[in-house]
Length: 89
Image 1 (cartoon, rainbow, N blue to C red):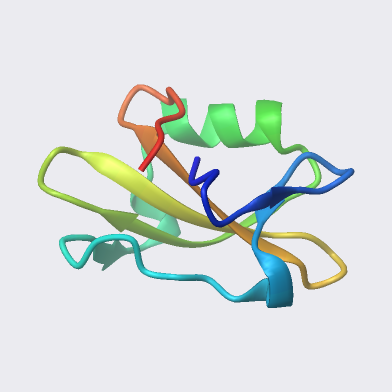
Image 2: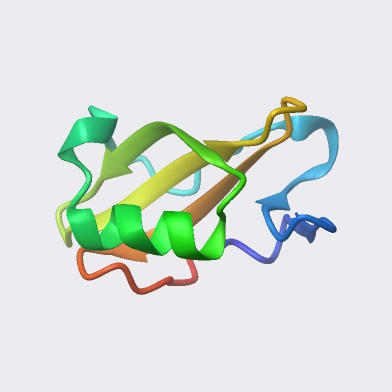
């Protein structure tokens, strides 16, 4: 999870002020959310049960950049490895 530019809201999702999502690295390529490994999907539903996965990206190290949103439109970005472990980027 990118904690440098993010704030933890009361619902547990990380987001930055103004609901702006910044690009951390240019080496992430967008993929379909259906291509996200099951372990990552399980980690999302376990740790962010109220969030929807809107976009997914992958890099050469098989690390995933995941854009999540809540019903109120709040968005946040988290990062995970292919096994569903959260990582700092």
